[in-house]
Length: 424
Image (cartoon, rainbow, N blue to C red; front, side):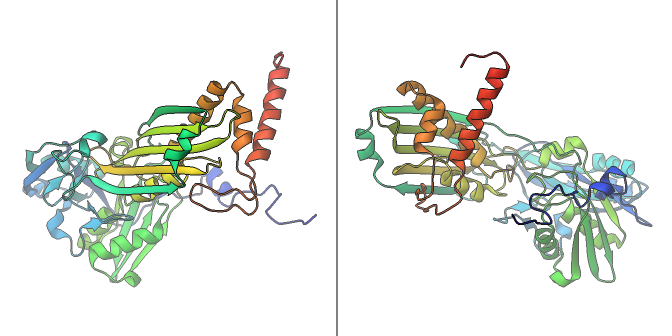
């Protein structure tokens, strides 16, 4: 048997000792000489037109070094991991509660936060859309452009209409999932330092290369003049893939030529960080009387909130995995991802797959109950194996472990039942 350095061994995680001894330096721990503290003025309404931003009182507050709005951005005022649709600082349209309107750099965090209260924003409230089905209607308010549909995807294999006619049993159910926040222990934080024409940024991030590109475009600097360094990161789970404090801290440092640190409060983090996408999923599944799956249809709707983030990727992966680890010869899946004026949804462990897992496992249980067989049995009848073809027509050639996993799980379950005095 081969002996490896890592595989099959108990390996100490690389940053374990630094963390447990307190030597690890998170972005919020960083201190630089002559450092300023940044804060962000955010919208308190979900949908509005910005008429005027008056920063004069904030600028006059003792201890305030700089107050900036969209007018001060040298380059691009749009960021986004797939679609550049989110403003670094709002120009004219507010699309969610928490949109960034202005940023402040001050000698202390308290002064920066006090300055935010002095920024006067004149707005005209506009109707918003907060339901994904309302967002589909022609007469609904539009969050971006002429349509609230961010992405539409479909996947078809075989003929489901014909296959359902051959089914002995059909189950139809609607499944709903809600927003989920990552709740990483460390809120988003970062420090920017502009020196000798080079912008350096230390951040709590999962995406340092992406951060560099967005900061460079915003400041209109070549990428070789921007350094993005991932600080020790206290949790992410997908929630630190999007831009958070990077552009705001960098913009303030660019103008002040002093280091600027921004650390979000827990409230601010909850308000504007990306969440897991809510889904509504209509499943229709058909099988023969012996439990063999014949047809599977899904109509799926997702809410990406005010900005795209990873929405197109989430809905794509959701349709690919909507039948779960089960072989189905006839599949029809359609999915729409909608813009609303709700909080932005983005990456979170699984990218759409946890949502559809609720649906496909619910369907398998429902079929088993209707057929009078065990949930374990119906899964074993239909689970992928070497040679199976997935819903997306991929042939699985090796390393398909679902059946072994199910069998071992069942054995463990029997042990638990027996240990606790069960009789079956």
